[in-house]
Image (cartoon, rainbow, N blue to C red; front, side, top):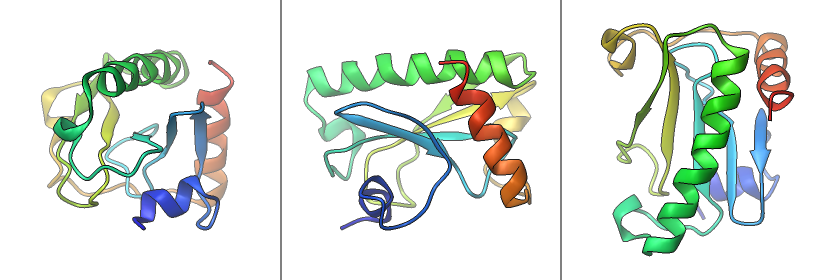
Length: 129
């Protein structure tokens, strides 16, 4: 069971943004920017391209809804979307509020936000859904 499956199951706490029967979105605990969110399928599949076409399409539609909510809640020029998928063997999409391409560099220092700030950001985004 991956760490993401444990988060979905409620075994590990998270800052949840949204959930439906197939997908789950929560704040990245090592964010590149405020509002950096992960979107994952509830089905534990290692690699995004191994998802069947319908699941992948539905995941993108779910991610779009979450991305629009992030954009309404967090001042930014765009929501950057990336798939790296090496750090956790569970398909996931990063939604990152950005003002330039440099904001998408995973070598950048991660923000250190308090639990209160994380809760506030999660609530701000989820209230825009």
